[in-house]
Image (cartoon, rainbow, N blue to C red):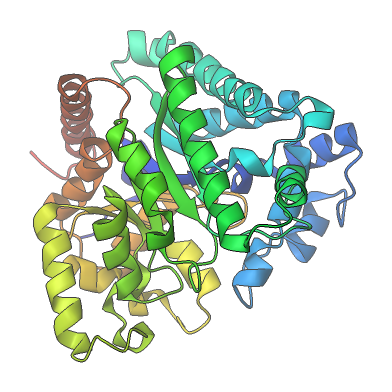
Length: 408
């Protein structure tokens, strides 16, 4: 089915996999760098696009290179609030009505600059909430009947970090735990992150709706963070895990069975038997079939990031090769996401455009994907409130589809 760019732009959308530090405006990054006296490879947008934020990357390492600059400028409370506010505005402008902004607070903590876990989260929330209040009081909502804008915050634990170069917080942690094994330090940091998240949600009312596990999968399986996720589970924090982005299907299985994952970030490798390295899995094809069927039956949403996967997996020569086609064929619940608006030079509308142009998505299936974004969100309200909000957006979807002649 053919969809116009105007329809994809107008329809209500979500972004459930959205990294704050990968989604700054390029001109804002330059201005923030000047303000914080951060050295960056170029002080022009054209220069940065050529040297750092490229249309194509050779590997995951090159893709991640830009984060050293974005994280550096975000070690400033005003910049954090500004980036959060602008990110919400950019989504509102393309009818993305609900976003979940994720980042690793411990990458930004710097006590010498007055950056604590608490005031970082307060700054993020302040920026997002300001954009929310402005939009929800605007004529677009009050007079034109568009759905309101809402958001949640997801805090990430890092699977792996070293004693140097990651952040002042992690460097200090290694210094004070210099007799501990690396995994003990990493585990302690993840548990501290989730405890702080629960406390700030409960005592400060910050809409921290879930936790995530990000970073290098190989060598740092989700099961090593079992206790961290158990704590989140027992304190009613939702759970997503980066899994199957650069490792095999067993990484996804572990995220679900060991970490109670409600959603899976990427899940790209689910249908790649060659990436399964567990020697106990003899029949890889059957294992994948069983896991895919289990995930589909439980309606565990896969947060699909098409452009990002294309950029970090050089073996994908064109988008038709993306495993999204297998997710569709297996009737899995999916949600279209950007991952990183700056690093991947994309928008939610663009990701939907790629999806409908390269895969067979009739209107009913497209509507299902949009609906999963709202229904499987980690909305900070009650379940009843989330259902009401999702229904409002799907009614608006039909209104937009009718306006563009897709339904009578």
